[in-house]
Image 1 (tube, rainbow, N blue to C red):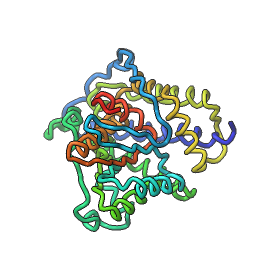
Image 2 (image 1 turned 90 degrees about the vertical axis):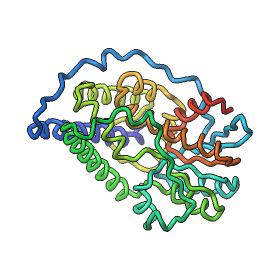
Image 3 (image 1 turned 45 degrees about the horizontal axis):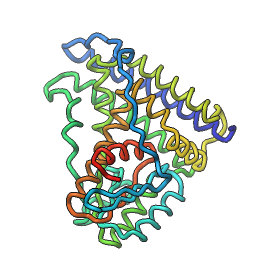
Amino acid sequence: MERYTAFRGQCLLCSGLLGWLLLQAILLPWSLVARPPARITNQLLQVAPVALAAVPVRGGLMEWESLRGRRLALIGTSHVTRSDADKVRNIVQERQPDSVVLEIDAARIPKLMNGTLEELGELVVTPPQPESLHCNKLAFWDPRNLAVAAGAFFIKTVLGQVYATMTNRGMTAGGEFVAAIEEGRKQGSRLVLADRPATDSLESFVTNFVTGRSNLLEMLSTYNTILTEEFDKLGIQQGGEMTPELLDDAKALWADDSTMLVRFKKEIPEFYDAFIGSRDAALTAAIASEEEAGCSMIVAVVGMGHTRGIQEQLAELQWK
């Protein structure tokens, strides 16, 4: 489909630029530390297949219920279309939730809301991150932290430029979160900022390469191969111009077909765990915590790429 052409080109170009910057960030700081990098291993070739559980995705709005009879409306969005914001606003108005769980962290509030976190008042909840997400950190005294911080900074800079480009094309990200916060405040709902801090995700990702647990060039090659092959299956071609509608449709296709996520989890687990799996865990933990706190109606607003992982973990917690 020719109308998908830009999306593929943007992703492949972005991954190439990200890879170059990440390589520079990892290699250059090593001249400043006494300890040489660990030997690069062939870890990617040794990863055992891991299959995602067969949990069906129930469209853009997914309804779940806990063993206590408390309900969840899980909304999957593309982050960039006005229809997402309208959908979220209508659902929050209709459900009048006790709690609204959001795939954002506290650091994003000032830019997203053009105000401070304190202005949102006592409704804001910032839950602690699951202990399992702290296992990939280096000791605070380890000189390799310099390389990790540099790599994370470069990636964050690249992503900032990507989002700026999207904004210039009319694809302002996060409108659905603004809608959820505005409507949640009217309802007196708890506003749960449940996402893992972006810096933590980036540093976790870079740590794999700084410590030699993963081969950067192999990871980038595998990432591009997966994107190319899966885009081909969806009929996405190179060239053209990316639009909010195109991005929305492409993400919807991925939500319906988990092949890409399965391949990311199996073939490049360092990418999947840092940017998808660990955040699924944080979001699910926040939902479970709100349910345990007695919230009888919860609305969760997340990207489409997280809906499958969240649903799998809810099923493990015996939600139905």
